[in-house]
Amino acid sequence: MLLGKPSTSRLAAVYLKEQPPTHPKLPVKWSLPAKGYLGKILLMSGRLWDFFVDTMITLFLPLVCSYFTLTTSIFFNVSAQNGTGLEWAGNALLAPVQYLLAGKEAIEKPDGSWEFVQRFDYKNAFWIKTASSVIALPPSFLLGSAVKGLSFVDKKARGHYAAIQAAMSSQKTHSHLAYYQEMGLQVGKAMETLLPQGHERRPGDEQVLAIEKEALREITALLNGANIPWWVDCGTCLGAYRYGGVIPWDSDVDIAVLLPDFENVRHALNQLDPSKYIVQDWSSREHPDSYLKVYIRKSNSLIDIYHFAIHPETKQLCYILSLETNMFFPEWWKVRERRFTVPVAFDTVFPLKRGTLDGVEVFVPNDTKKYLQRYYGENLDPVKIYDTATGQYEKDLSHPYWQKVYAK
Image (cartoon, rainbow, N blue to C red; front, side, top):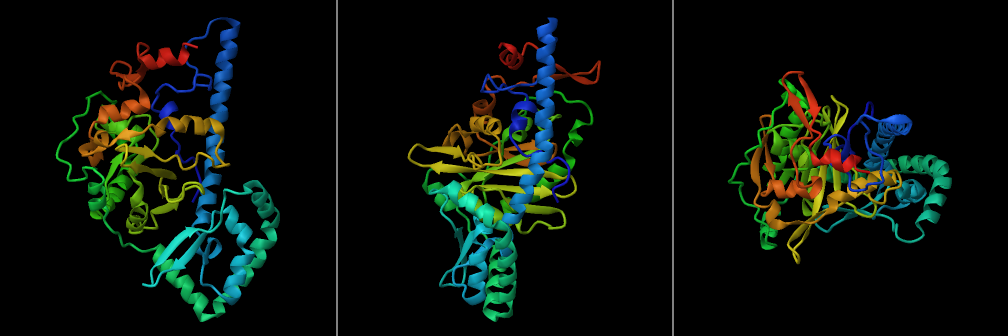
């Protein structure tokens, strides 16, 4: 996998959905006519910044995808707690590798099931441990792999690997609906339907993200079958609100679920065709079990599955920015992402409503407008309007977005 330019970050929420950034000093796209020598310099600077950002996204995210693919390797990155002999020695030698890959420890329960927990403590002496692990990486990888491979001559080690693999690929789910209802979430059947605002799109734009929408249809059918509450989020939700379909210049699909359903979602998605999709755990060390992505082989794109923590004491949900402290992601990306962590009231999201996304049935937050205004501001109208005369999307310069962006 990992070829092409996967569009994975909510950077699109600023650049592609075209809503005003919350950090006025961060560079933005320059497109208004510039006047004079200074204006030309500013215009060129803006274009150079855009080129830099686009290049970084192209080169940077495939590398991160590769990292998260390695983190899902059972052989390299999962250590059985009850391992002995060569199996134990192999995992001990692989410790530096597993430290860098946020390794898991597999704990066998009395009933024969397995629990997976983070193997290492990342709160203390993080940089010292990280530097040591990087230095020890080559011998750790070579020797650890060899010793752990030799351990497979032992029937017990082979049994551990097979059992862990079966647990990781399990399709069993356990509904949390009763638990959610006890906490005050109205997670019953969606009764009402969202009526889109009816903004016009260019004919044919309903085919934008056709492959991703088909993937969405398959993924959400599995979530529905497992009784997992979900809704479309970010630009996908904004598109459903504006058009009843995707935003014409959007580049990905976003889904939201509740945090306790992380394992349920992962197990449900094990039913996806592996020749078409790869499910990746993008959770961070600080926030394990909080972020999933589905890679679509055909389009080299990713579907984000964001997780919301439940705070019953305040009756609010809060998006978990799993990668906020991840060293692979630059600070400008994190600044833009933090705007999505504003808590949202239970009754703004639940009970969910039904919506459509170019013929794909989706769920949207109960008060969709209020939910989206947390992200994008009061005015949710498109900042570019379809002009039937030109066949193009023209900027609506009366929209507050343009005034806010260029006021500085």
